Length: 234
Image (tube, rainbow, N blue to C red; front, side):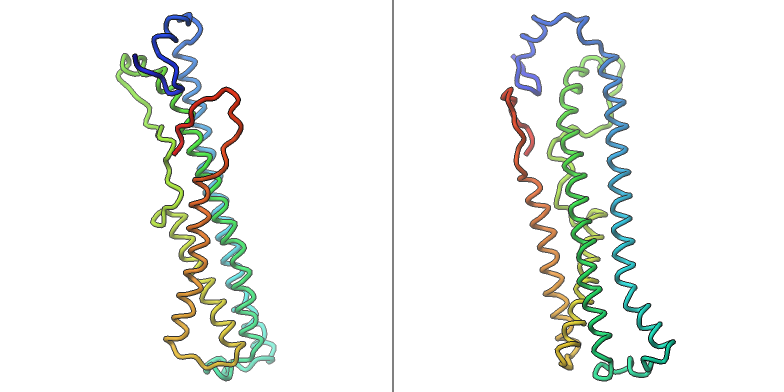
């Protein structure tokens, strides 16, 4: 005796349910509404990630704009930028400050990605209902919806995905700004190897934030379940 996605025996449902209660066309309408909903989720995700990326690029471009403005106003000698030890401390301070501010859209990008992926997985879990109920109907018409029904999909931590690559790239650039700013303010004259090590360590710390946050998204607290339905989300 096979069970449905909710754990109720299929034979019991068929025995106690009037066939007129559930019309396949109603489930087809539900499927169409579901497709429209997940499409809007992906559009919102792309739009929000684009906004955060634009904000991050604006913050990271601010030090260059400030240096150009200072050089145009004759406050800063452009020749001073050709040597590390001649760069004024306030230039390093601007670089470090805006690099630290760039972490804010980086964190917001991670949170937006996590929330949209949780929504997509919840909708995949919901699809199990009508996909099970419409199995015979799909077989009769010789067609099936090309929609994911795995509640574990999409994977939260996916470094090679679009959001993952964006987060890694933004972490590296933020790490470069922060590292150069701190090294310059410290008065040290670092070698390229030292600068590279500082950037790598800082980028790794930022990337760990992405890894931990996206991993914690898979272990979020479950909502109240007064009916005792079994959870199929991994």
